[in-house]
Length: 71
Image (cartoon, rainbow, N blue to C red; front, side):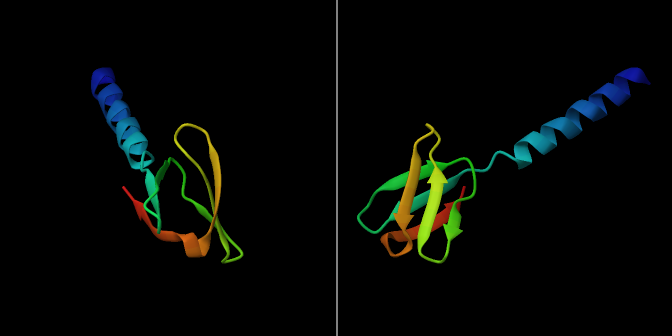
């Protein structure tokens, strides 16, 4: 019984962690590509703000961004 409960708990924990591990790809019109672990913040419909996987903070004008996709 304990073993079954432990396996169920481990399985649910894995499902939660996998569900939270999506990345976002931000592409600019000039061909640059950035990846972020968090959803980019679109502020005032003028800027796209996010932090790359390496920790670099980026602020782009919204009209410079060609696409934002969740991977």
